[in-house]
Amino acid sequence: MILHEVLETATAKGASDIFIIAGLPVTFKIKGAQDRLDGDVMKPASIDSLIDEIYEAAHRQKTALNQGLDDDFSFSIPSLGRFRVNVFRQRGSLSAVIRVIKFGIPDYHELGIPENVMSLADNMTGLVLVAGAAGSGKSTTLACMIDRINHLRESHIITMEDPIEYLHSHNKSIVSQREVFIDTPGYLESLRSALRESPDVILLGEMRDYETISSAITAAETGVLLFSTLHTSSAANTINRIVDVFPAAQQVQVRGQLAQLLKGVVCQQLVTTTDGTITPAFEVLKTNPAIQNMIREGKLHQLESAMQAARNDGMITMDTSLMELYQNGRITKETLLNSCNNYEFVSKRAL
Image 1: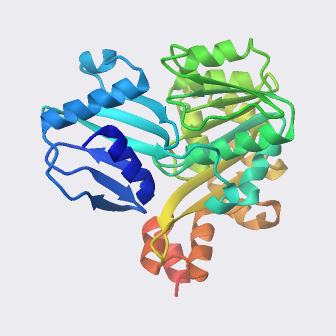
Image 2 (image 1 turned 90 degrees about the vertical axis):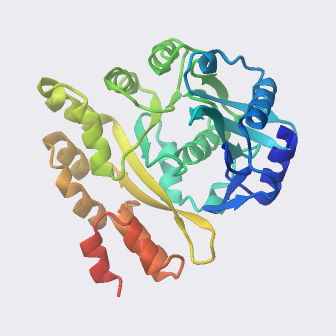
């Protein structure tokens, strides 16, 4: 099976991911379920040939792969879409997983992203964090926020991503998109460089370590609006993750910086609905004087109750978001209980 045929079939079926792994036929992930194509299982030789086609389509050398490393990159096929690829070895043979990304920025209404999430893009300065597990839709949410800014105000937006997933055309804003390890050596280097490039908005693909987190906080203090992501499951965990990477002697100072800089935290996950589709559930924290004081004093255990009390300000906890989906008949009780943060509390409410 040739690459173009695989990609064409995947996009026609509405697949989100393509698995090319020895011992299985080409397999698509569609609405969370696996769809294995009819035909022979993939053998190492046929996989090697298919992966050669992927590198040729991406105009990329196999430098990392030949050094025994996994390789993560993206490429586009006209009329089909954009594809993010991870090539790796398993059981002695090459394998690949391809994420399917449609051309253009998706409509946030159709994706189920609420206005209380999108409105965080209306901030002019500060730090906005989007958190969640891998594959939970963080990149898509951020792409929608960047697109909103691009169409509403004149800014210089600099993104640094690994790899670039969504391509933004210049609209009211100038959008400079840098792919880490291709356009720049790494997140830290590109972030430091961005501060000399007259930015108004910075999208930092991921805050992975102490150096990057520290530099992101410093960048936000210069008066830009900085977006980034973490792999955390709640607003409190997200703030804790940032504070905990710093030495104990600096943590009081960092909490003070976050109290001033943080504009909002969005935590999201994708859940399967009763009709077999996928919908996002969101936890949204927006800072106000009370929230700022809790962050400054390290009283993060109080954030959940403060968010529940500030529903009119656009805040919502993950469990409340999931409960609303359940009460509206969008998800089953089993999905609710498997996805919530506080099982005991939710199980008592889900009668």
